[in-house]
Length: 124
Image (cartoon, rainbow, N blue to C red):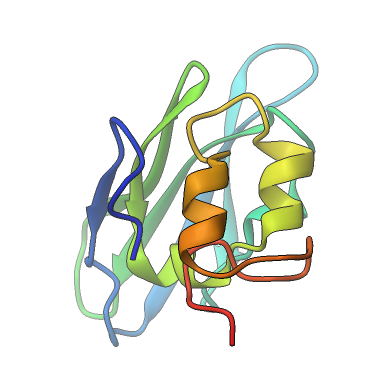
């Protein structure tokens, strides 16, 4: 899973732990805001193109936030496996087409043929 995308670090920090998520997004005025987004693993298609910068996770019983998705310019530099499992080809093609996530070799490797197929899980 997610092993052939250049300059992308894949982590497994969420695992099976419970906790809450927070998103750091860029608003139209140009500054960043932090928003708590709940306890379910978020889908990356809930934000407009270019808005999402970082997703953080705070595990139950901890007092610190761990970054589980990070974008730097037009490169996604960090992605947790739990987030990667949810990403569909259409999400990448619409919202992250100018990033390193868009990789036709990756789509081919997981047998993705439509925008509804998962980009990082094998599609049967």
